[in-house]
Structure formats: structure tokens, C-alpha cells
Image 1 (cartoon, rainbow, N blue to C red):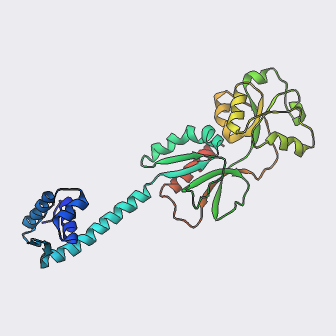
Image 2: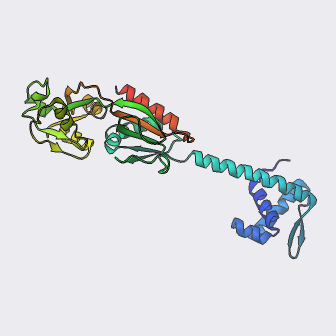
Image 3: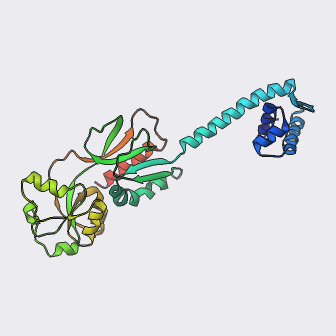
Length: 290
């Protein structure tokens, strides 16, 4: 009759390996009596004597030796399966720029966890590109231009698509903006990417005045929401505010740009089991936001 006493089998295996109930008990953090009692129950259940008991320890009987060989192999298979399962269900680590995380990913993340309740997502917000080989990062989202250095797979997530945005109250007092020259007289807000500088330099014209400067795009967007001026930001990061009415898109950069948001993952490495699902979800959300 098959046994359901897995703990008893573990106690038997330890006792057979050590040849001693006391040493088995120490390994398993149990009492010697508990181990001996479980072994006796197994012997009674199977109707076979497993050990010869001696003053100096234990010696397996012939049936006990054959039983121990099989049980040792079976427990090793179980332990290996548990280790693999624990490894496979480790957290999936996502690295993104802080502004992408706060303005786009975090507001949507509950959608992924709702459809993948077993997934444990850890988000690292950092401007630095993680080493996907050594930092334990499974997926990175970065603003850049391919090809990316290293043994990295990349997939486009969204074009840069720069747009000028401001609060409705700040825009109410202004006139129509059809060209860069029309920004003269407005207070501009710039982030660490310095897109305003690049835009005016590419057009060969000087900036109207020194912009209000922030190191992160999210801060520049927040400043625009609070009527401090006009920010130049990726459309992906201001879509929610534009839909909710806290920002208005008043101008778009029509230049074809190769720069954009890309999904990066290490090539040649077994992916986290949730990675493909997370990437598919990212792409779907970006398409819906397009």
C-alpha cells in the first residue's frame, strides 16, 4: 500500500544514511525518539524489517537497503523539482527609467498582475542601463537608438514622438503655436534629455530664453501640470494627463526620429517564465496608448 507519510520517508532516509537515529534527528531538528517511532511505523506499514538495531547504531537489512536506494532517488527528484519551481517563480525584475516607471508603467501595472496573479514583479527605476548579464534584471525598458551594445535583444515599444504640453490655464492666455518661433514669450520647461536645446539647434534658431530645468522628465511634466510653463515630452508619458485634461498638447515635433523606447532582454539566456507574457503585455499596452 502506498504511503502518504513523506516525513517518515525523509526520517528513514536520514537514519539509513547516518546509520544512527540520533544523527538523523539532529539533521532534521527532531528528537531521536520521533525518528525511531516513524521508522517503526514504516516497518509496520510495509510489514518489513528495515534496520538491524545495534548498540553502536543501525545497519540496513537487505529489504531496507533496496528500499533506501529507491527512496533516496525519489527524494532527490522531489527536492530537485522544488528547487526548479522556486527558481522559476522567482521575482521577474524590470528596470526602467524613473519617469517611464512613474508616468506610464506604475499606473498600468495592476492590469498585468490581475491577469497573472502568480507573477511577482519587482521594478527598479534607474537611468543607468543595467547589465542584463550580471545584475539579475530580466527586462529593461530604455529610451535610446538601436543597435544597443552587448549581447542584447531589443524590441521597439514606442516612438519618441515629442510633443509640447502645458496646463489648460497656462495655455488659455496664449495665441496659436504653429512653429518654433511661436514659443517666444512662453516659459519653457526642459528635462535632462535637453530636447528643447536639440530642437532649436536642429532648426538653426536660438532659444527664446533659458528654460526651467529639471533632471527628470516626470518632474518637467509635473511642472507643466502646475502651470509653470510648456514641457517637451514623449507622447507616451503624457497621454494619461492629456486624456484626463490636466495637460493639453499644443504642438508636435514632426521630425522623423530613430530614438524611442525599446524593450531589452539578454540574448542567449533562458528567460524568466513570466518574461514573454510581460513583454507581450507591454507591447499591447503601448499599442492601446498609441
